[in-house]
Structures are given as structure tokens and as C-alpha cells.
Length: 386
Image 1 (cartoon, rainbow, N blue to C red):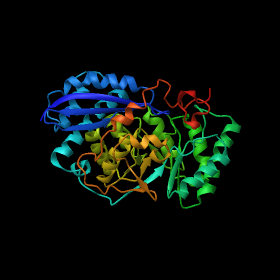
Image 2: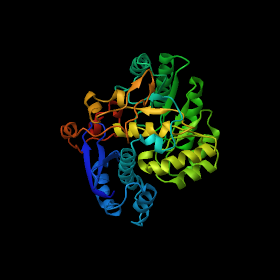
Image 3: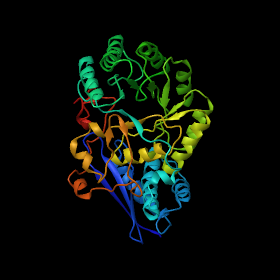
């Protein structure tokens, strides 16, 4: 079997364009992948087609070789753009392998370690940055059966905040804790916003509300800063979604400070993602993969999580997107009472792209999430706050 064609598709979801890949073979099988990257849909699409030459005519089963060649042969490190394009192609190869062998991808990754996957809700707090709005929406999330939820209470904060804005963020955290009660996991998203000192001030102030983690409190580029916060924070730190190669995780883990690792398989490829999960296991840590892209990202992460013994919790946006987004896949993820159950043994990812639905939602350059612009919580793309 040889790879014979690579195609790309962009879906104009309002808050983030989603980019998908289809890989066809000379034996009639095809696989699908995703390579979404906020604000760079067209750029990643171009990168997929530039990298295609390194796998055309090759056996799709050779995913280790493909991952190496797609990264090494260009002799350039294009960061998340590179990782996303690589992953879109490699994901599709895993799908082809599963279809050729008649098994779901999670069986190729080591088999089922969990009967079901506990999830946390994200994207549920679309609306004004007010404690009452967060309170009301958190109540609705728990009523749907979720036992964990994540949110960013910090508005458009960057590096430091004034006393009034600081107090508002803590009031929002307090409102969510009050809404959900003491037994629901509350996860605080930092979006790489703060200096070390500001992050630690927030960690101290939020600790009384018992958050499960403080995610990405400082920018990821200086691992030493993340380690400093993690070692001094009374709240566990979670991070990792920004990294796109194994070496970055190796450096992070060697400090033995962060033990909740949020790898982004869509920047790594499934081959390297599985290896990173093993690295985390060796450091007695747990994985909570970043799953905040399109619906295929949710599905592929579920396959990885099922086959990961040290899996902790699964991120889900799908319940809080526009209704039509659930039709992009022929068999999307479903959440029931706060859990995902992959009960089907359909081969590969167990789903395909709905090309008719994709055609109805074209690319829009204004579809991205401006996290440092006031009003981004409304999730209405680049128009937020204007």
C-alpha cells in the first residue's frame, strides 16, 4: 500500500478555523487527520502540502519513519506550525492502519486501559466577564452531568494586573466554586498570561477555593519560570500544550516540579504523543492532553487516552460549540454524564469527515481567538471586544 494523494479542508468555525487532512492510498483506503492551529489555518494548510513530498509513494504503516522525515528532512524547526502539519498527515496514517487491520487506533496504541474517560467541560462560559454569568453557566454545566470544568477568569490580562482586576478574577473563581459545590473539580486556565510573581500571587489567592490545577500560569518558552511557579505554588501546576517535540517534555520533567502534563498530540503526532505519555509515567505523572481544537482532535485524544495507563482527565469543547459543528464528523464524540465511552470497534478513528457539511462553512480570516483582547470570552472570533 502506498500513499497516493493528500488533500486539505478548512472549516470556518467562528472562534477558530479548523484544518483537516485526508490521505488516500493506491488501494482505495483513506485516512483523516486534523492540524488546527489558532490563527494559522491557511499557513498550516500550506505546510501540509509542502511536507507531502516526503511521504508520497510511501507505506502509511511506517509512521515512525514518517514522523522523523517530516521533521528532519526540511532541516528547519517551524515549531507548532511544523508539528501541526506533521500531525495532520501522521494522524491520517494511523487511521489507514486501523482500517487496513480492521481495528480501532487505540488497539494499535496498546489497547484499552480504561472503561470510560472522565471529561472536563471547557468553552462553557461564553459571555460577559462577571461573577454572576460564570455562576449561572457553571450551574448549567454541572446539571448536564459534568464533574469537572475549566475556565479562564483573567480577562485580557498580560504579565500583571491592577488590584481591581485581580479582585474580579478571584471573585469569579469564588462564584464558580459556590455554584458547583465542594465535590466538582474546578480547573483554572492561565493561558500563559503572567509573570512569575503575578502567577504566584494568584495561586496564593485562589488556593482557598481548592482548584485542581492552575494551568499555564506563565509563558512556556522559559521552562525555568514554569518550574519556579510549580515549586512555589500551593495549587498544582499543569502545562505542556505549547510544546511540539519530545525534548521539551524531557527538560520539563527532569525538574520534577510539574506532574500534570497537557501534551498536545496535534503538535506531536500520535507516535511521539504516545512516547511522551510514557515519559510522564516514568516521572510518576499523569496526562491530560490538550483537546481544544476541532472535533477530530477530541476523537483522536480519546483513542490516546484509552490506551494511556496514567491518563487523568479529558478536555471537551464539543458540547459547547455551535450545533452544526457536531456534523463535521460522521461519528463524533459523545459525552454522557461527564464521561466518554468508546464502545464501537469501528476501525481507525471510527469516523470520517462530512464533506457536504464542510463545504457549507468556508474559511474566514477573522476566525481566531484573541486571548489578549477584552471580550474574548464571547468567543466570536476576532470581532471580540471591537
